[in-house]
Image 1 (cartoon, rainbow, N blue to C red):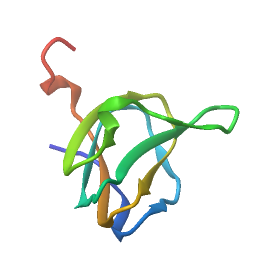
Image 2 (cartoon, rainbow, N blue to C red; image 1 turned 120 degrees about the vertical axis):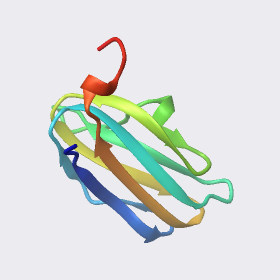
Image 3 (cartoon, helix red, strand yellow; image 1 turned 180 degrees about the vertical axis):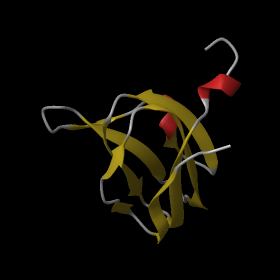
Length: 100
């Protein structure tokens, strides 16, 4: 099984990650850390250059994961409050998703 993992944050406090190229398709955000009231939020850049939240499933307030579907674009993660944040996105093989 081939998948691609992008590291967005490693052992970080409140921060905005560097932007990364997303090749389009289904993905999963993995986030963990000491949230302490903070959040991890996945964002995508619009063709006009504005950064927007991807959605409710990719805004985490505790350790977890959330799925998403995006076209080719730039992505980043924004961490607020908290410490020790790790955030990764991984491609998903849609053949394993029922109904797609």
